[in-house]
Length: 207
Image (cartoon, rainbow, N blue to C red):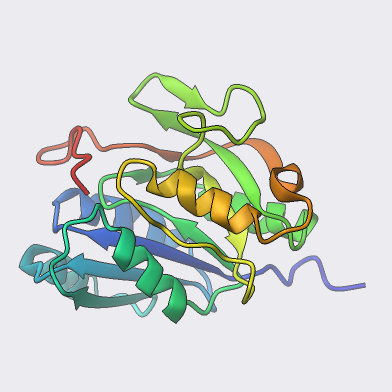
């Protein structure tokens, strides 16, 4: 029987347009990481503010690069980062989101408890609404920041489109499992807060 302390690693993927809230998000996330974890941050075109934030933090967990300017809500950047990811599980956080202080620990222990299964956690959305309210994968009912999936070749979908891209990613991923959406394990833990209420962060959904 494997040692319960041998928890899986996590890759956190964050496209960015250089919002100041990136620093707040990372300051909450980085203390939770351990050996094997990584944060992949991809600028949508040159993002000097994001690069400055990353350079100042000087964290060995962060890998930062810039893609050509595309302005497609960070979707091509997420796909590129997936192809470079090394963690056992994939997690997606926007540069103006807040990560709960125990989120990574919750994710890892849940992944250990339900190995090889895509997980759907809860998130606080728009400051008042908690998603999910019923355990179903439905458009407008779930979000990419809630979805944590095994990083297994042939079992990871793609981000496409604009507004429905996170749902497209979830559905294209789940289509690669024989059980489809039925394989998802819904969990009560809140791991992210959508949006950031500080300067230059509120409501910034233009990513």
